[in-house]
Length: 337
Image 1: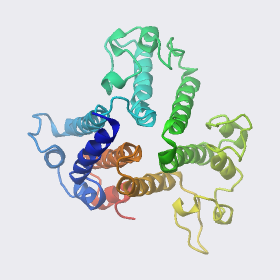
Image 2: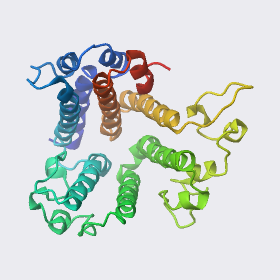
Image 3: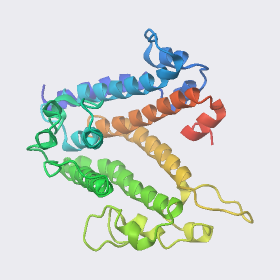
């Protein structure tokens, strides 16, 4: 079908999928079940596997992820030429799979590790296992043709993360001009905030110096300073004291930080920021989905909304496995704050 017909069909189909999803108010129901078997029935509406309860959490997480990817690829299949930005979002799984493949080869595993197969949209050739060079051959990841040593794995993973973030950022430039600004509001913001979260983790959890953190951020240009469109806000926070709210109060993303009460001790919380970002991006994606039908925004926002649903399912499954209180699970998922 032509692009206009495909866009109309995809919007209708995607809308129906969201109506049945555990998003918005329905997300709370994921945390109200008392057993993993109940969570399975709620999410998948089919027979619970006959396996020990303690193994069911992993099974739920795996099935939910594969269903998410399958639904997204089915939507992409409606287009003869899917938008590069939608492909770039899906191909994040190739980057994650490649890390898993590399770790398996490091460990001397004889079988291909579990991967998330994105079908014909994949850049990689998993059937060439165990040859890493053939798995990545003729792809944008062809440079990754040897198994890195454990001492260089961190640098290789950073190179992968950098390539993915830049490919996703630049894919927005290929969106039709009339739709580009709206898509950029979601994708570029998401990538900027990923840089901020990473910078904050390194600063707080590892007490890493600013010049070292800069080496772990993803920049668009060579200046590597606060003017960079992708990493500028992350660079800005490097000069802030972690326990001085005044430093953070005028930051662009101050509204996403853990609350501050006058007169009480405050320290910036990377985990709170990360959860706030997930919630904020989900809300923005919901608005974009409804506001911009029949555009590239539909699949981009749908992907982000369903990613949040997947995060909630994982949180519920892990929480039940570890016997975490319902209120704590909801708080962690951002349902109650």
